[in-house]
Image 1 (cartoon, rainbow, N blue to C red):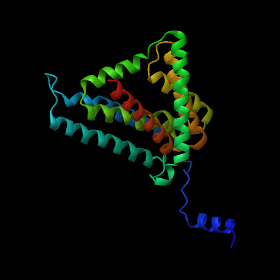
Image 2 (image 1 turned 90 degrees about the vertical axis):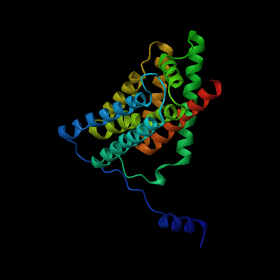
Image 3 (image 1 turned 60 degrees about the vertical axis):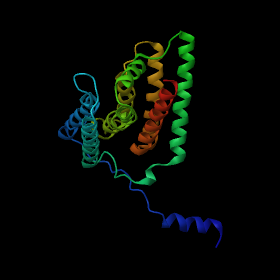
Image 4 (image 1 turned 120 degrees about the horizontal axis):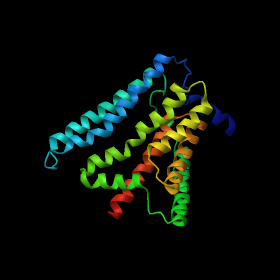
Length: 236
């Protein structure tokens, strides 16, 4: 038996990933997009419950935050499965080579943004400054969870929902909206910040257009946010 035959046999023995089936969506199912938006907004507001009126943090409130946050993530995941927006999670969707390539593209986009900021005399973005200020008043655990998990909701809202639900019959329209809405959601205030988030959105939207793999986008987004968290704590 030659090498080619051995490789073919191994490929047959490996479990095949189920492809995401295309389902017709109606105006009623498209309206469930509002449910995802509500869960996203609730999850974003939850960190506020961790402190009391004096600004002190209480352990039981942090525990409540974790429970409610996990509930928002779980309900969002169940919603996406119910309307056939994503397949059930499988480790084979987390393809390390593609994740590394996506992270590399995000890093390149950040380098380009840094050059633009240097040329325009811009010192960071207002969105990043706001995030840094939030990090100063939240417990580290809550801040890290909030920042790193943002990718879950943002990929579900700006990529998956637009491509598979709202504009499922118009992928080019979905791509334009996915890029534009993600960029706008990060509140760019000048050319440098617009390019910063515009390039990030271009990378993430491009990944989804090419692979239509929520778990790939989620991994790249999570790693990028985690990288930002490490940088934040190192220079803090």
